Image (cartoon, rainbow, N blue to C red; front, side, top):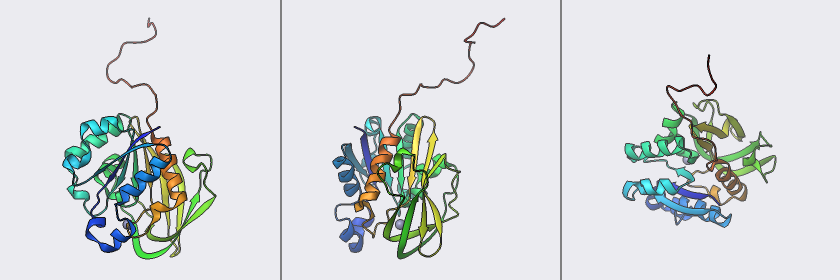
Length: 238
Ligand code: ZN
């Protein structure tokens, strides 16, 4: 069992009737319920809670943090961002969803602009599983469709992923690297593209399977803690 904290900005759902109709209890609740049904120990946190719900003790208890944000990235306090980045370096997993590509923690961890092309007309997206041996693809078909999506197109200004798991095609002709794996320090990071607030994408079984698999994949391993700096030889030197 993985201890997961699902973080959501939780503004669109409270400010827009159209979004509230799709996610009446917030995007975080749908994701948390889906992961909980799959056996994970799930809590939630939102922007307007003290320290955005991401206190030292919450992060200490979190194996994998899931991040959804869009319109208020700038309101995330820098000290909380530092805390999240440090936790990743120390081994916490991070799943960054959809518009989280522009979140402060993701940009900090990538070191690039994380910019992309976008268009919102509700066109079809097809995700291709391009790394079928990867654990994040367990139980998925060769490809699956998101019937109505916001388009994200290349170039996506990210460092080349360690592993590229999904590639998206859009009805309008663009393609996008939709499932990107990284390690930073001891932590594993997975960026997953689907999930615009006006479409019920997080209700889709294939999407929930990806999130479940990604949580398992990103959970901290049991590797050694590295040491740095001046060091005595391990072997006897002449
Ligand atoms: Zn969006």
